[in-house]
Image 1 (spheres, rainbow, N blue to C red):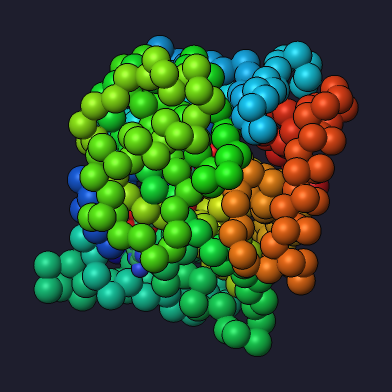
Image 2 (cartoon, rainbow, N blue to C red):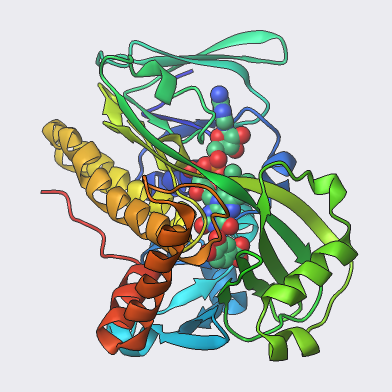
Length: 400
Ligand code: FAD
Ligand code: DHB
């Protein structure tokens, strides 16, 4: 088998990259470890930045998103019996976010890929990358007991945090930065009317909570839980009771509850691998970086990596400019670190760290610092603007 760009992983990064490249006539094959249904079963992000929305439109997969997605012009922060609305559009000169689930983005991309007749190999095992430092890299994998070899010009490692691509960069070349947080998020999806028409991020003495949504009839809620909690220990009733204690009282009093469709616990982590490329192999999305979910940046950072690699590959194949590939990692990392910093800051400000010392500061002092930080940034327009411009997403950088 031969292709121009071999893509490892059929999550949103791999599928979006594949679609954009195909639009430019650049041949690509996606190799995925699990089945398509398994990929669609993972309930993850829900908020898309303007840049990602535009990229989905450019890829020609935005029709359903534009019909069913909800444009949000504001988001709320609730703390100390206060509710502060961050008016995204007013504070940024018109930018907004789109509420449209990662599952739906993935489904639209899968449908478009199938319609275009592009190859995706699902349930491929033992995927390995070879000769990535040369002009003739290749990928091997097993499919239904057969050993397959895929020759290519470039490899896009879109295989998430636990994928194989990052591991092909030798330890002496890469630096991995990591911070693991002492709590997780328990998420619940339900077919209930959202409790409010905008997202509410809540900081309380009982811990963080987030009220989000997928549609006018489907809600997504999260609560901060200790890392030792198991999802089986949380009945739906226990979840709703705890959530109501953390939401603003008037919202909790009128909210609709119902059976869960999905419930899971996600750990929180900040992680960046530098550099994001090795020879002719490029890391994209979660394969290179993870953010804690506060601030909704994970999927959106994946999209900006895709945009950069798409521009570079277009330059390579349309203009014959092979040298531009060296820019990939530095362009991505500048935006990645801004997203990492914002997510880390929001996480610190909005969560309860209990008795855990943070950044060498005892828990009570740290908590006071964060309370002041939250008041300082929300009490004045400049502060709210700083939050808004990051929440809607910083601009994408061009290739030189
Ligand atoms: P992934 O979605 O992880 O896709 C990688 C793909 O590669 C997967 O399909 C995987 O099966 C495949 N793969 C892995 N290994 C191999 C291999 N060896 N060979 C071939 N294929 C392989 N972000 C938010 O903004 N908000 C959220 O609420 C949120 N919640 C999250 C909850 C969880 C549990 C997780 C893990 C992430 C969450 N994220 C959230 C982050 C967001 O979902 C990710 O940033 C996004 O999925 C990144 O897309 P990706 O395509 O880069 O990686
Ligand atoms: C959702 C998840 C987030 O991490 C976030 O910051 C906002 C929304 C969601 O799943 O809807």
